[in-house]
Amino acid sequence: QVEVAESGGGSVRTGGSLTLSCAVSDYPWGGNALGWFRQAPGKKREGVAATHLGDGYEVLTFYADSVKGRFTISQDAVKNIVYLHMTRLQPEDTAIYYCAAGALDRGWTRLQVESWMYWGQGTQVTVSS
Image (cartoon, rainbow, N blue to C red; front, side):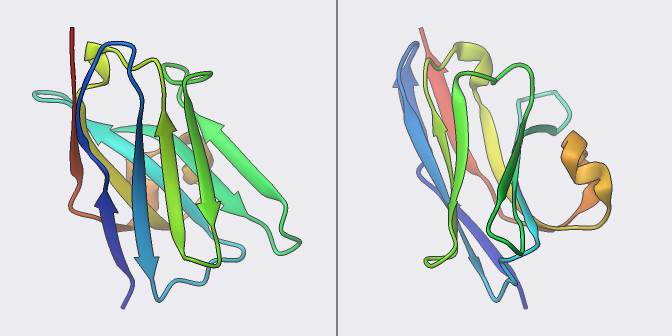
């Protein structure tokens, strides 16, 4: 049974940085994708970033336009953890951040919410001005 657990959320000021962690257990790391999503109050869940570790250990990454250049997704396949390093945070980044694993189809490259099998419970990120 794959288990997904996020941590690292908190409150920061505008312009600050925060790193989220996601531990994924019992998951075939090589050849599979992992992603980060977020959901702000009153809004739909949206994709933030995704990463894929290929069989040859090549790494692919995809980002939403709104976070390109500010957020970085990375993974530690030995520790089974995927990270989301967030910089230059803005109030509009305030949301519950979710980690996802188990891509169901190629929609994961477009950060589609419906393309993932396993989800964590989420961690709150609040950015205040």
